[in-house]
Amino acid sequence: MLNPAAGGGWQSESRADIAVHHSNSRLPGKYRIIGGRWRGRKMAIADAASVRPTPDRVRETLFNWLAKTVRNAVCLDLFAGSGALGIEALSRGAAKVVFVEKNRRASSHLRDQLDVLGAEAEVVCGDALAYLQGPVRKFDIVFLDPPYQSTLLAPAMQELEANGWLGKDAFVYAENPARELLSGIPPGWMLWRESKAGQVGYYLFRRQPPPD
Figure 1: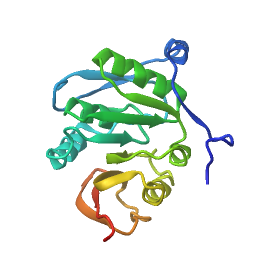
Figure 2 (figure 1 turned 45 degrees about the vertical axis):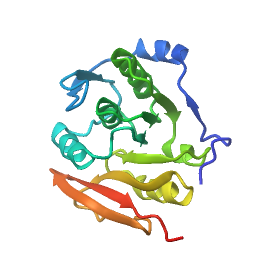
Figure 3 (figure 1 turned 180 degrees about the horizontal axis):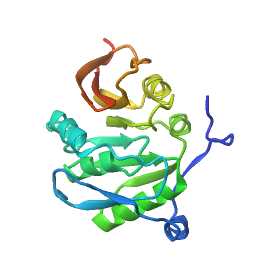
Figure 4 (figure 1 turned 135 degrees about the vertical axis):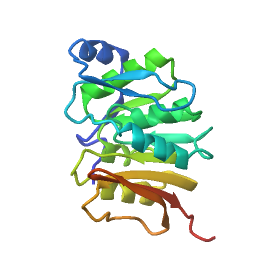
C-alpha cells in the first residue's frame, strides 16, 4: 500500500513547475469538448506517452448518462492524462474537479489548459493510488481511465470504497480493455450503464450505501 510520506508522494503543481515543464512540451494533437459552456472548444494534448483522451463518442455517451447528475457535482479525475473527462464535467456545470496525474509534463500542461479556459480546478501531480492514501474528501463522481492494460483499475476502485472517498449514491466511471473481465468491483457498486467502443469497454457504476 502506497504512503504519500514514504516516497510515493503527491503534491499540488506549482506555477513555477508549470512554466519550466511547459517550455519543453510538444503538442501532438487536440480533442474537442463535447457539450456545455465550452462546447466545441479544441484543447491541445501534451506530448506524454500516458496521455490518451477518452474518444469523443465515448465522452458524449458517458455525459448523456450523467446528464442529471453532473451539474453542481464534486468530481475526481483520478488518472487525468489530458483531463478530457474532468474538463467535460466542468463545462457541463460541475462545482469542482480534482485532477490527479502522475506524469509531470501532462499535469503541467493540464494546468495550462485549465488556465486558458479560466476554469477553477485543482491539479495534483502524483501517483493515483498514493493520493487515495491521503486526506479523504467526498466525491459525487469519480472518473477512472488508467493507462491501457495497466493493473491499476481494481486497486483504485477498492481504495475508493475502503477509504471512504465516495459520497452517498456516488457514480464511478471506469474504462477497461473490452476483452478482459472487469474485476475488483467493490460490494454495493451497481452497474448502472455499460458499452463498448473498439477495444475498450466502459462502465458506469452507482454506489449503493450500506443499510443503516
